Image (cartoon, rainbow, N blue to C red; front, side):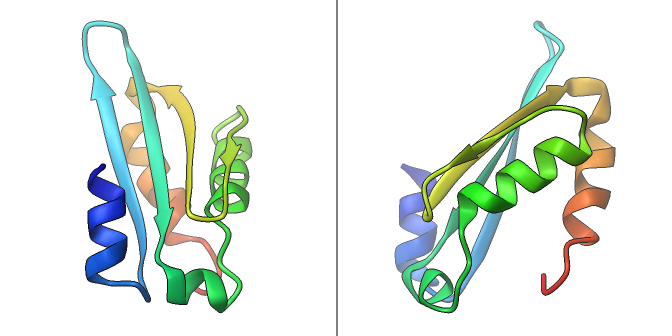
Length: 88
């Protein structure tokens, strides 16, 4: 998928992508980590869980790919949570 391509292009990077479904009122944050980022201790599943908890929900996944869901009306708030992560 797209996160796999991004991780291959920039293995040192961590990626955050938002999927917004206006018709359902739902949104999801997809988190990806390249191989070098993971080697330095980044775990996309832990990031997704932390962000999801800050948004009043859950989330999680594997070291290289994870996701969390939230209400579409909170799209701007999720970016603030991501910006506030230590080390990002």
